[in-house]
Length: 143
Image 1 (cartoon, helix red, strand yellow):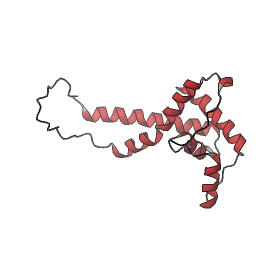
Image 2: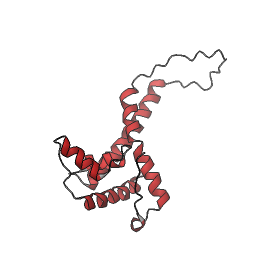
Image 3: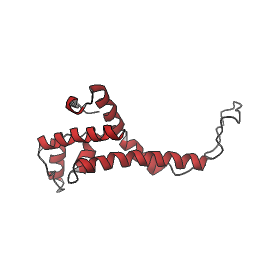
Image 4: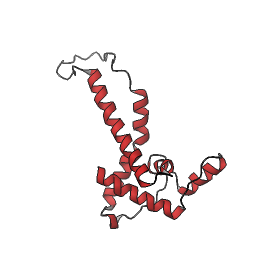
C-alpha cells in the first residue's frame, strides 16, 4: 500500500476507525473485479487428500452458490462505482483509481494522464480531495 495521508472526516460524522474500515472496503475493489472475471466455473474437482470426509459440509448447489457470490461481488463493485459517479461524474475514474487498491495520488494521476495523452482530471487538486471526502461520506451512508 502506498503512503496514504489520513483524511479527517469528523465534520461528516465519520471517525478515524470508520474511515479506515471504508477505505479497506474500497481497497478490495480490484480483488472483487478479478474474482468476477475468473470465477465462472461452478464445477470443482474433488479434493484428494487421503483423509475421509463427511457429506455434511457439501453444498447441494454449487452453481447457485457461485451465482450468489458473483451477485454479491457485482453489488459491491457497483456500489463503489456508483458512489464515485455520484461524487463527481466528470472525474469518477480518477476517484475510483484513488480509493481502490491502487491508491494513486492526484499528482500521480495527473502526470500519468498527461504522459499518456489521456483525459486530464477536470477538478483541481484541492477540489479532488474534497470530492474524495464526499465519496467516503456517501459510501458510509450506503454501507
